[in-house]
Each structure stands twice: as structure tokens, then as C-alpha cells.
Length: 299
Figure 1: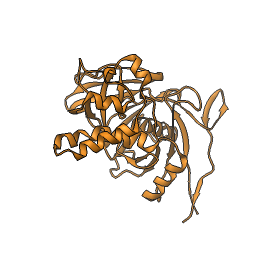
Figure 2: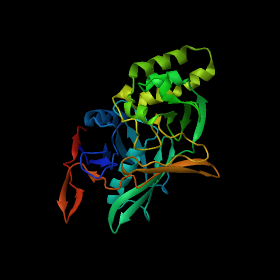
Figure 3: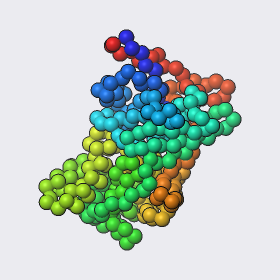
Figure 4: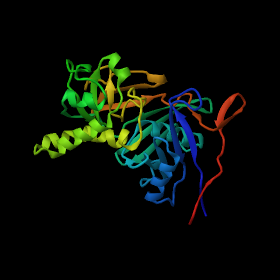
């Protein structure tokens, strides 16, 4: 039998069983692609990460991210949670971890209070890239809203990416609270765009398609006020500015970005402050990981 240790954590929360749950396999060597996907489906969390040796020895690890049905090029809270777990194991170098992922290199900077890991800042693997615009009515239906809920004074709904494609949409505060993914609308928008002879419309379908691939189509129904601030398509109350991303603080998360020489880079800061293992015990007044029995798989 092969044995694999794993850890489950809650990301973006100050209490157990809150925030975004994540399972992490700190040493996934020997697992096949099919086994990684099957394990993720078995855990039934929004994402599970598998840590492998890096291809470049100057980097910390190669990290593969899976949701229940597919592998992801990049996602926000899995990087924060994986960085938290590896930093607890002392695998960071002077507070920095570098993860090789399908979308590129993700840098994680660890924040400590003495020896305790208290937070992290991740930088997206790619600079912000803005793509085609989409019809407000189409995006409104995908978010379970009406056309009047979508604001276009600042910008129309726009496909963008920092490693995973998503759609930037400005809505009213009241609409943000009501937004709920409509899977049938996602599928309808994708079918219409794919059936068009217009290549630009087919390209534009990648935004709604990516939302469905990473979210409702695979059973991952995140609240529209995304906690990762970078990788998930979602309605936004504040309009994006290509010169400087809006800063917001949902549930203790600080997200922002600034223009650099190679483009606009978005980041999350202190995103795992207060993150605690989902199964934990008290020791010295602090929450600390409790070892799970290793997971056994047939050889």
C-alpha cells in the first residue's frame, strides 16, 4: 500500500469551519493524474492541491490544483492555503515560496508573528490582461440578475485574465447581494457563441465558459463576493481600473494591484491571517495542525 499525508485548512477566516476549505497533499509524488482527480472528487471540497518536486530547483515546488472534475491553471485560495501548510513545515526560504503552476510561477510571501505563520501574500502568475467585451444582458442572466442590474457607465462586462480567464462586471450593491450563478444561462451563452461564425464572439465565450468550468458547472458555487480577488469570475460592486485595481476587504482579505513595467499585477495580502486547520487541537493557547492518519492507496 502507498501512504500519503494530507492536511485540510480553512482559508480567509478567523474561525474553524469557516472561509474557503482546501485539502493539501504536501508530498504527492507517485499519484497519477486520475488518482489526483479521484481524490479531489472524494474530498468533495472546492479545490485540492498536490505538491510535487519543482522542475527548476530554484523554485519551491510544482503545485497542481484540481476542482471536483478538472485541473485548474491557477486559483487564489488554493495557493494561500498551500503556502500556509508548506510554511508550517518550514519549506519556505526566508519567507518566500515559489510554485510552478500551469499558468506560470506564483510567488507566495509568508507573514509570521514570531514563529507562527499568520498570513501570506500571493502574486498572480500573469499580469492583468483585458480582452473582449460581452453583452450586459448575457452576463446578467449568467449571474441571475436583470439587465438593469449591470452598470456600464465605467466599462462594459469585460473578459480578463491573471492566469485564469474571468469576466469583470460592475453591479449595484443590492444586485451584488442577489447574484446567484445560473448554470443554464452559462451553457446557453456558450452554445450561442460557439455556434456563431464570428471568431471574436467565439473567443468572447471563453469568459462565461471559464466561469462555468471553474464554478457552477463543476459543483463549485462560491459566493459572488469572491474572497481570492484575482482568479474567479464574479460581479463586482466597484469598477476595475486597468491603471490600478480596486482594493477591497471581504472577510479580512486585502487585495490590490499596481502597474509595473511588465503590466498590472494583482495580489492578495494577509489572505490567510487567522487560517486554521479544519481539524485541530488547542496547545499553548494556539490552534495547530493535528496529524491525520496517512491515506492508503493500492500499489
